[in-house]
View 1: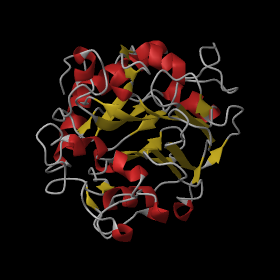
View 2 (view 1 turned 180 degrees about the vertical axis):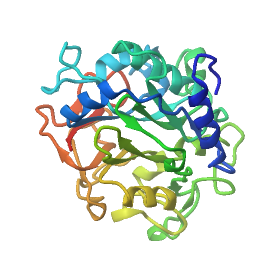
View 3 (view 1 turned 120 degrees about the horizontal axis):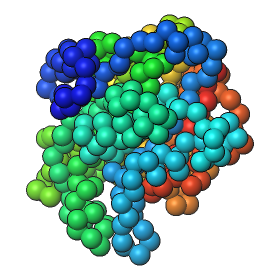
View 4 (view 1 turned 60 degrees about the vertical axis):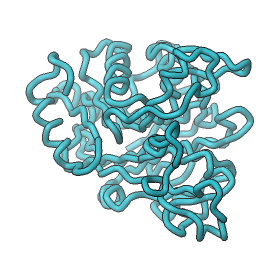
Length: 347
């Protein structure tokens, strides 16, 4: 833990959490102390508010080749909605879970979580964060930014989950190990999926510039518990490689669930099977993924609008009592190259 203002209790749980991931760089920012008043209020508010977004390292690519840096508070304001699907109103309620792709690591995830805390008047540390890789190595060059300084901000990429510790608890043993996406290595014949491998060494990008690119696709999951009711909530974040758009791959010789490139790691599957509410957020880099794709796990996809330009490549699957959305669960003004998806889940 890098912050002196975090309590000893938080630091102790982080230490335990880190030991649960031999060989990986998973990082946990753990739950704060309970509050009986908050728990009572949560019991009355039986709605879990969940969002999914590829935040693009909070650097937005523009059509003219320039890039724009987005502040955490501005991004949050553009994404969080009220019950009518409107952003920026007084009726926007503090979210419970943010599933994010493309953060720089623990540092950016924690800073973003603290900005979310401040937005709703909570002290720093109210929102916790876990990431697949705490400090991933940089890859790439300009990342399609005419300003190299902004491109550099996109060179470190991992995926994470941010949660509201006022309402949800997380035990160290309820965080999965990371799991790798699949891909078709360039120059390899697809052969109906026979050419697919896991996207990690030795089957990763061979060139020096992109050697560590595979880490952007490492997934992670966790099982939370609603403090007021004991309801268990599974959440997973995934980011599949660009190659998945043309050739679905999820592992060695495997095209994924329903030939989509999606798969859920063994560790994560165990947590999912032990959870009442289940949520999976994905930047799949693939169009045409059906809302029924994860129905075998009891989940349904929500939101059918395009999320990246004219394409829908981002998906949010949920098992739970999802409320209807007047904006098709898709937030049109999200300040990212990807539109956010959301679900408000009754429990």
